[in-house]
Length: 240
Ligand code: SF4
Ligand code: SF4
Picture 1 (cartoon, rainbow, N blue to C red):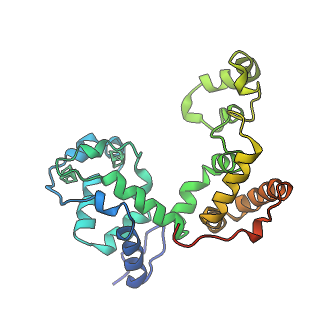
Picture 2: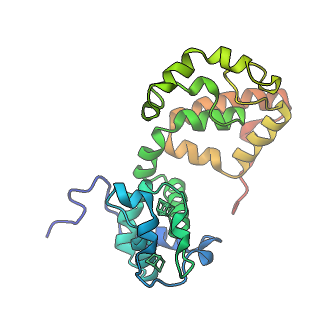
């Protein structure tokens, strides 16, 4: 009998590995606040925007986790966890379950373990990850380009065309630049870089996207070096 994963876009792994991933989710410190049993009432499904557009159901997460169905858990971990919009409308559950919270933890486990599904899902966000981790700001105005946000319609093209004018029209805290959302001091940057390294986030990026890791390391090393730190000498703190 052929594997149920024969046509899947992800690799099958041993039951032991699946169990280990499952245990990582259940070992998360937030786990005990996410699941209290399930009535199968479907209220979470009715409130879920992703359930309207995808073959996706928050109820399935509550049920497979409650039943400890490790094989289905592994399927979801490799696929539909990325269909969740993380809106948490599902928390209107009468049992006070939090399927969106279960999915949050599952996504983190997928990222930390460098699963292919995580690499694929995060590829589209590499520019945002770079911006947040290198500058400490979120999406900057110069990222408002039509090719980056095709689903935002024609208004993005109009805004990006007149970006400098728009930026000059709002308060001076913006520094009238388009490459930063707001100014972040060098000291804050140094602290952020140390936090990314000490919490293991840089290692996770290296695992997911080596090219992005190289560019980020280069930027960080320069700033840290100017402030008396060597990136390679900063140790990751276990258990953070
Ligand atoms: S958090 Fe995810 S599962 Fe919950 S309602 Fe929103 S999209 Fe659906
Ligand atoms: S709303 Fe809560 S109890 Fe109802 S199906 Fe969803 S998780 Fe289960």
